[in-house]
Image 1 (tube, rainbow, N blue to C red):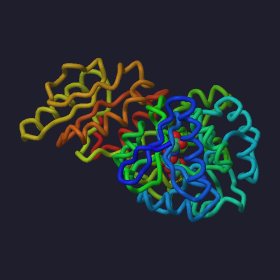
Image 2: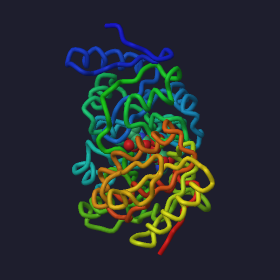
Image 3: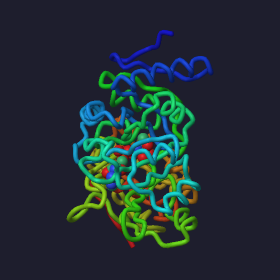
Image 4: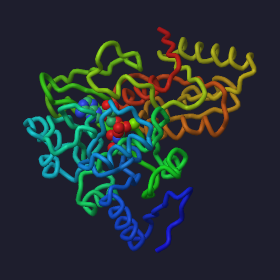
Length: 356
Ligand code: TXA
Ligand code: MG
């Protein structure tokens, strides 16, 4: 089969079963020989390489321009394969994996020697997850190796939720992208540490804090609450200290609720418009019509943060293609999936404005 390509990056479409089989075979061969293939997961597209091959993993850091002190998540097909990589797996991990794997939950374990230091950025722990996307699972088993995969964006840019987003950042930098359509969750996996003390949330994501607490029947330490990029001291997860997900234009996030939040949205929008800057608004359905900006993107109803999560990164990317000069975004209540949405918006924001 001949595949289309952009700047030398091959696009492996997996439409029909026949096409899917050749696409997976092609992608698996590249991965086995140390190459880099972007692939779909249920959360976002990942930039995959053999997690046990230090050279291949170094390639990921380079093409993504990712700081070498930010460790990668290793993707496996199940607990059995996870156990090959980890020294010890607490009882809680078995319970959580039983409930949420395959799915958007990443667990941190003490690592075995076998996992190269570069994959974990020198940490003695390793992050592991079992993705729920059928193509991701098939690719990992076809390649027969665990896949290290960060989100397939250039470092600092919004994570990709379609193969086109991947190509925007990665065409010419990676061997291939496996195209499995749009991702359904839309924000990355939840990262949970079980290393010591109570379970600790390091990144809110597709599995909510409420879901984790219900299954574990205990409180989880939320190390992400209310935090954007302003981490003081040593962060529990290296990824916490970096600005992320950012469109090119500066983004002003207005947090809070009700009438005062709306007033602040309008006041900011008016002042940017008076300055003659092309404004992009990111709001919820309940605020439609609040201000007549040239670009208005509605994420979802405030009552449906799952849909907001699914659309968020595509909306952030669209601000670039629509050439807005400044962005004003409306914040959401921080519970359930609203936690992950707010975490990503804060990290994308140049400035966070909180109204009471
Ligand atoms: O949904 C996802 O998790 C996606 C898809 C592709 O699976 N992947 C993803 O990877 O979001 P990445 O590299 O963009 O984010 C990984 C996060 C970073 O914040 C990193 O610091 C943290 O996980 N992390 C990785 N290993 C860790 C470790 N051993 N201890 C603490 N944090 C870790
Ligand atoms: Mg990322």
